[in-house]
Image 1 (cartoon, rainbow, N blue to C red):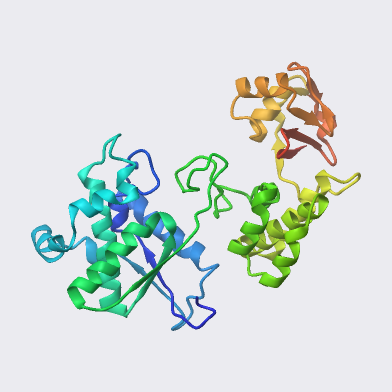
Image 2: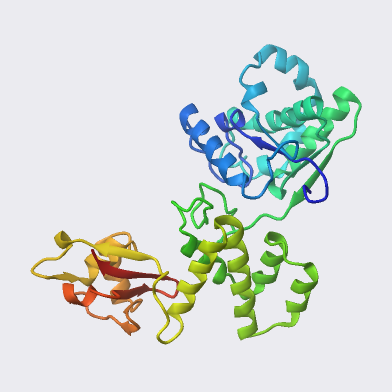
Length: 351
């Protein structure tokens, strides 16, 4: 939209974050402190700057705390309340799916608040279209209706398909299976690998939704099969990693990933874990400690299960003995590559 000459307004939820959106969730969100909300807002601005040009006059970033936190409750009810039908609200999918487990009055207000956001943006900045995920459809329509009823003007809503995790759930920030834009939470290498390992059926959808590759180029991939689909996945992973983390990190991630599947490939850019002297006992370290220390397993007990189930290998050789140990000297130089499952691996070296 920005490339087509429009001026985006990125809306940060400093006010709505105090409530929490029930859309796409089967449980109530964890309440956040004002400090956490402000920290999240600061992080969002930094992340969005990778995708939206916020230079002079090109785009705006506003925080709905600016108009929501100072609202007088009685005045708000009188001004906005008459324009919302409870019957219609309860028919909305985001509320309907919560009725059996229980919907708090706190969350019930969310649609009205998001609608009020659109009303404020329309009045303050002339914003006439709201764009978001398709789980926001009811909330967005509430805004267009509020603008029509109070101002007699037309406003519009546009949604895009949500990305879902492998369990078919919304890939939200607080759901398991999410991939993060923050390199502290998902490293550029793991980010690359996530997209490199998408299902065959999803790769073209993701290329169309998430990259700026010419649509004609993507259409040509429609008939790709077998190893060609792996090439498409590499293109997807590289393009997205470049967009989010920059070209240098994308190059490193691609080189590191390719090294795992080629004989004699360089492991220089592979994720690594450094062992210190205190990690060794009598000059050696056991397999369970390595898996836990490197983050390949969440605990020693999980590491034991991983080995027993045949999901662990070292430098390409399967490890079947939970008591396997490795000498310090084996990690010197290039180190050793430990792998868990098909997608998790790390190069282990000594300091």
